[in-house]
Image (cartoon, rainbow, N blue to C red; front, top):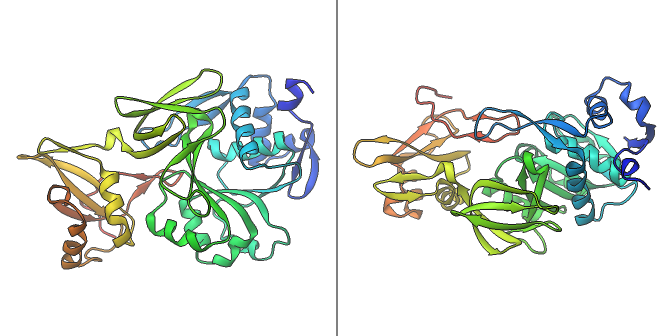
Length: 346
């Protein structure tokens, strides 16, 4: 079969029924809109970045590069023709688009739900989905009905960090769960971390052909074909295919001449705080920057005496000097924007 036919099959199985691409492209759905872009004469697709570390922007990614990412996922999870997979992510971003490309290239049976779904239909499905991708917010919603996990064999979680309390709860579900590592520029994940079951741990393991190294402590991704991507993630390597993320370089706090990783502090506190929170800094005349905490809860939801006990998990210099209660800003892919909003209350 030619490369063109591999990239552009003539049919797609959607919600259990086989459709010609021609007929699907004549529709007005978000999938039809993407198919028109995938099958046009250009050799790239346009993709919007998440905007988690800056203003969202539109970039161009070569279709062959996107297809290579899809193929790595198909091989890793052993997804085969007619396997049922579920798309419940926004089609505006790369993760949603890749679900369609995987279905096209793998001959999968692609089922769809709105990203805002309550997933009630999973209670009635006759046949489980082999593969589902979600963001953490959707996983939290699904966990209110743990029985629905029986309809999912493998769950891939991306878009933002997985809160510790969710990760602990996922130890009790029947689905095999993974957290992904990647970015828009790499056409979604290049590495996976097992959340439960065999191989569970804090380390990310690269997919087939992917290698990593460090430059100034930041992770550099090397993909098959020679393309490399420098990230802003501080990492620790086990070897050139296994790594652990420490935090974002642009989140580093220098307080009193000492460097602190907010994500490291958050990991120490996460088992003791059930509300969403993040560690950041604000200007201080003596320290340069002082460490502070923002909590998404009502003012005083955690009593000062409770916070003092929780902060005992930290070293003296890691302890936040102030705590702010506020509603968090989030990107459309559910990533928290680490910005203090001093005057806002919930």
